[in-house]
Image (cartoon, rainbow, N blue to C red):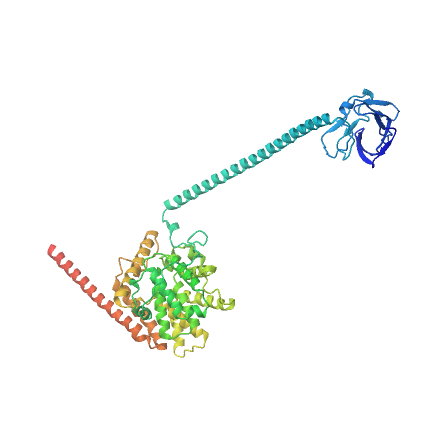
Length: 545
């Protein structure tokens, strides 16, 4: 083919010389010296020249001193341009004089374009070997990484299990300590630490929120029942709790309170259920007593034609007035120095507690019947309800009644102080109004109250505390308990209210007078029987002599 030559665009190769990677510009100018010899000059700073002869012949390189080095072509790749990059493998020449090893002929394969000279078969074989080696290295590295990751995870899990185990041990230890402490406290004398009246806001009875739709049955009240609800003669003993809840719900709707205060009807249901849940199963101060007082208030509101605003406060205070009552009165709380007495400094501890529980329930969004009232109005409602509940403390009876007597003759419904005093007297009337009801309805309440009194007096005796005579089962009888209460507490208070609302005389005041007469007759019978027994005992004693 003669001595023709061919030229290609400049290329770039990288050589590793003395541990440094050098960029080399290459101009491919192939020249045929003979029919089977070619050479390729490579120009770079070391002026080394690569002489390429015919295919499969030796490669000659000239070092800076001019020495010609022969390299076995079996380890060199034939002419091509390679684009594959490997950062971990260096192509090195092995067959050249020892004095030149490590000087020129260590060619890293990190360069992007390089010259390769070997036969196609050996190239494929070499590439396969390199691929296998690379795969082995890659797998080895992946396995090691996986082992490291698994080891780390196992260490973390072991540490976590260890910590969780310690937590379980600590919890069990705390439980055992608490149990041992309870046992020790129970075994001590007095047992006062277990008094059910000790309410604890953190660990005691909790208000249960109700976010679901209340499921107590909705009773359809007959017209007869609707009319009876407005009268003191309503028999509260014939109704189950669900029925009483429905009646209370009806009262709020009938008085226009749901509309006036923009109450959510579902919220009203939840609130009533929460109220029921927070009355204890005491003989007297229980949810039925709450309903009894609320029903009497409903009747008085209808009789006295009060404004809607006052109706809402009066009804809500009546519903909440004995919330979470422990069954032991303020006298016991103070004498026993219970938590409630300490918390409220011996000032109406039970009534203060009833208020706190009432607003704890109202603080729950799902039970807040006043949620749609503006904040300023709610402040007034809250203060009014607190005032009324605190007024139910019988220790303040004389103070409140005297204040009302001073105002009743010149009572002015437009004066806030007069109205506050009236509301306080009204809730007091309702709270102790059982004797206004027919005898068959009122008398069971006396039995319930005496049972609760006797429970307290028995406890007071066991704890060495003072016992009130009217609560001592060895001294009190039903007639003696009721006569004084009706004559000196109930009748004077209701007769004072009658001056402002004469319409209550026939419905409320007269039944009180009848009840007083009833118990006086019973007392006469009891006295006669007692006298008869004394006479019999005396006569028996005379015969024995």
